[in-house]
Amino acid sequence: MTARQLARKARVLRWIMNFYPPYLGAGVWIRRIAADFRQVDVKLRLGWYNRNYVGTQFGGSLYSMTDPFYMLMLMENLGRDYVVWDKAASIDFIAPGRGPVFASFAIDQAFIDEVRERTAGGDKYLPELPVEVRDGSGTLVARVNKTLYVRLKPRVRQAA
Image (cartoon, rainbow, N blue to C red; front, side, top):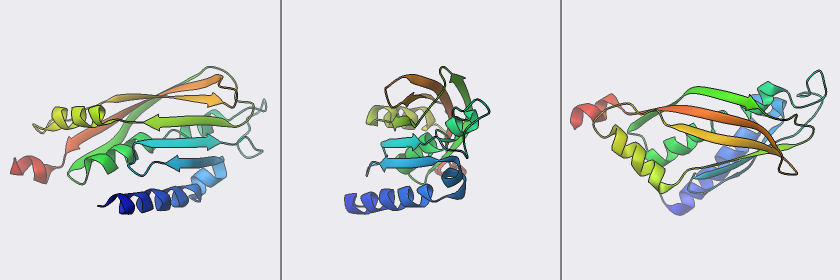
């Protein structure tokens, strides 16, 4: 795929996800998906629809804003020969989110190379990737740790 096609794919995916009903209803807004799918920036607005009993960001919405991004980013960077799933996650709530909050996801070539190396023999790999959720002033609101499941697809393992 050319750089231009990748950039278009990133724009279309961003548009689709911004109007995906679960994200739309939760107040999640994807601000940016890099053309190479190595960085994603997300915003969660605070509204009546995601405010909890004490008037702050609902914890489920804080988690949902971090849910699929590492998986999608890695899928796009590894290609169709790999199975990539979200396997597990944990969230540590640090401070109340009293307004919009933000999360940035990033992967680099070294991580992609590590995943390829760890899965080359057909083994599964379970990388853990952290992401921080911060408010507009930079205050840490939550830490999320995502665990992915990555493995070469069976047809590729058999061919090797």
